[in-house]
Length: 209
Image (cartoon, rainbow, N blue to C red; front, side):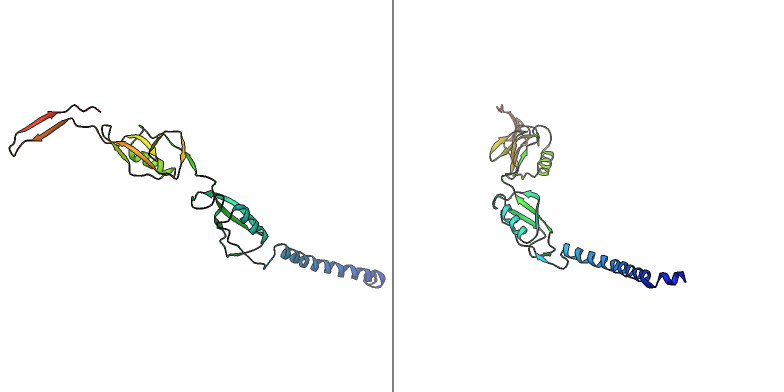
């Protein structure tokens, strides 16, 4: 009887009201959370990524911000045919549809030629070793020059734009280098065939190098 009275009358009404409120809360909390999360993440909203390649970094950032996107510079490169500070690459590419708040990664053109310190390759190794090291640093090489009278394949000097450059100097990486190497010692003994006979004569030449 005591239990029946607990569920009836004024006490019972309060109990049922509390139970009903608890059930409403249990149902309402997940629903409200889902709706808020959906709104926060802009579920279903698609934004087309604009083309910012060739634009200045300032303009690119403004264009992306106006569409609810975020610009982040992740790399730089050098292209002398493009305006300094302009965007060279973007990811995601223009035309992709993304959610609001998405980061667009940019590669920007450098403000000047990239400078690299020239390593010491003179008199320290062969032509092949010097070429390998310089190429690994991003240098382009022209056909090498040969200096007769010095040990074969020994690196004698390095030139850029016709001028000799020294180890430790910071030089433009985009301008090609020319390696000067030895062509071998001169043989000062010449053998001359005078006629069709087997007789030969040897002449010694003094060559001032």
